[in-house]
Image (cartoon, rainbow, N blue to C red; front, top):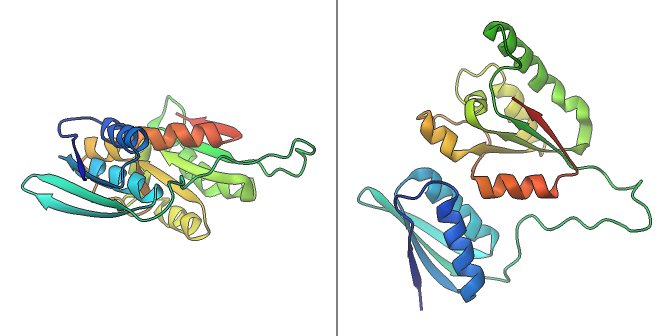
Length: 204
């Protein structure tokens, strides 16, 4: 039996949380979720895929219907890291950088933009401990065409860095279709990443 969830009119991360609660509480093998915006469609679809569902999303007037069938065990895409109780010296840190702006600091905006460009170009010096780059609020503007660091972000993603871009923020700035790099994400993913990170560096 397929359970239907109507998540229209709800802001992020409510559609994902409703879907998560239904999947976990009822141990569902089939679910249909109705949403009314692209960020919710992408976020709910990605969550269900992370829980081993086969997902199809199709337009239904101005809404979207997401239909999913479980194909495997309910295993989250990002497992809880296992740390050795004997030696933490060998544990490679997971560093998350959270950027909430496209400029650094306050005072002179042009200087702030130059500093942010320099910061993004330099974070590769963190090395392989750089685990997540999360962009929210004005920071999502770094991912669109014309961004002075777009090529750098594309190179980071190509090298294996996970870049998460706030879907609500993209929608607010009407930039959802302009994003060229990173995964559209939601607050549940961001909070989960913060929990799993060993260190969070916040900019802005």
